[in-house]
Length: 227
Image (cartoon, rainbow, N blue to C red; front, side, top):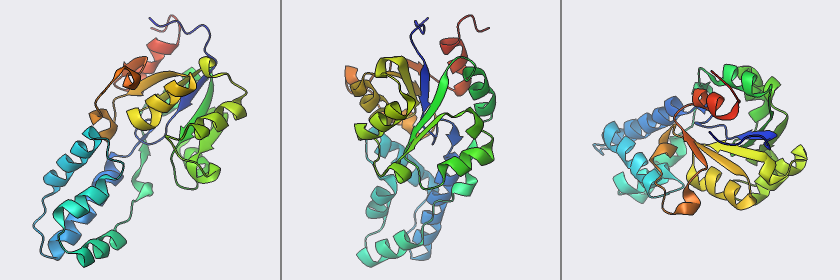
């Protein structure tokens, strides 16, 4: 079991960490398939899903751009499709255990958010019933800086009044969550959810201190004597 005696803060990513993005991601993949087929491109949804997984294996930052350039030959059609696609954030839902896990962890730690999110993260967390557990919010749209830039981590730590070694970053992506947090001197937990689980560890620098499959597994890891 890890030694958690010096830890004071837990920082969480949002997408595919606290909030399940599978449905909106699959929805926009479906939008792409429908638009492509309407223009005469016989694209199948499973092929696009596999391409997304492949993009994460290769650390591609923009899987949909890769899908459009891969499956759509005509530049005009590419732009036409790109302009029609819309990520439906209203399809996001918190993972079922997010509330209970944050509630329990908040008895032992302060909770923060470090996330690449569009405007309105605080309101969305409020609607999910999770805002009450969060002490610090450092989100890209509001702060004007995005992960993996370490500056977003520095903003969060400064707001928290927390030293890096007193903090843990919990996230699904090696590139945006694990590597920059490690460089800051924070502890790291990788959660194997969403497409981020396909990212391979390419070096020791990519390896989180701990890896879990779900939010529930954080409790025995971070709470002493948790049954």
